[in-house]
Image 1 (cartoon, rainbow, N blue to C red):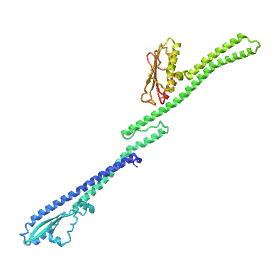
Image 2 (image 1 turned 60 degrees about the vertical axis):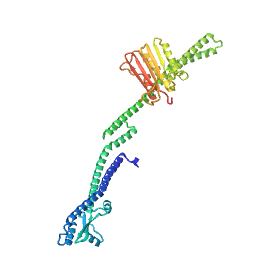
Image 3 (image 1 turned 180 degrees about the vertical axis):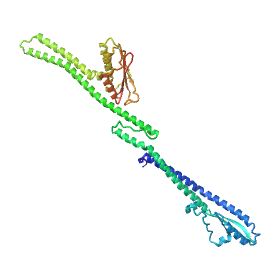
Length: 457
């Protein structure tokens, strides 16, 4: 049941329990102190009455009528509070001693259980006397009814006042707690809107400092989620755009290279067919058309390799990342002997997975393409080494590879914009949970990529 209560209900319930407990403890203290208080009052009154009787009774022998004088003394002493005085002979004649009437008529009468609790039995003291040689005694009996009634009235009054104060404190505190927790309802509504996709939802910071901090955090979270969703949308659009660009490029190459070659093959094949239909075909003409067909097939095969290389690096799966990168860098070195290419692939890199291998290969390939096209560099350094992904990147804890391509070329201009190649690489790496940074200095550009390992590695 406690788990089903709201925070406000829990605080109010705890407050009510604390106030009730405090009031109960205070009343219990007064009740426990009532017994010793009544007992002390009894002893004090009886002691004073006895001393008073000893003083007065001492002069009975000189009285003309000691009996009448004693009765008068008893009558006068019965006017004292909390005590009654009777002659022993009269007490025996009566069935018992009646309690004195309550002097405090306006004080609330205590219940019987309270009287039994604080004063379970009356206290009686016997004071012996002698009247004309006849032994007698005066009985002093305590009657703390009015004292008990005063104590009960004090407890009852304190109970009423304490209850009133507790109720007022409870209402005030409940009001304050309600106002302090009111922003939680606003936070709950804002979270529901954010969950439904309303990332522009903002909460006005209100309430105590803790809730103000939560409101600020929620606003920041909503803005971050909105930016992330917008980035995801732009990334999806970019992926579609890059796919369209890639398809157009492949279609252009197929049209510009494969088309002419296929047309030439058709022409030479048709010529060979016509030569074969002649009764005495010319060997020279047949040789010429056959050679042309071989040339066209070689060119067509080279074009096919270029297209396949763009779609999937040849030998990456069969030979592995290290051999495929070595072949790629040798090809660039052979085609650009004036540029020194230094390569450092860490032997502790290990198996990063097919997707990561392809991403590393494409990143280096695209970076080298940009260097040879635009940088005018004379030196390039390529390194691949194992690395741990920093906190904040997606799917951390798997490790990955740090790819770095550095050249000593012209660098990037202040208004330079990344081309489709590196932009596509950055979005690809971000989608995998890594990062790609491009830094340009006075001499050259450094492309650095953190590529996570494939899931499960």
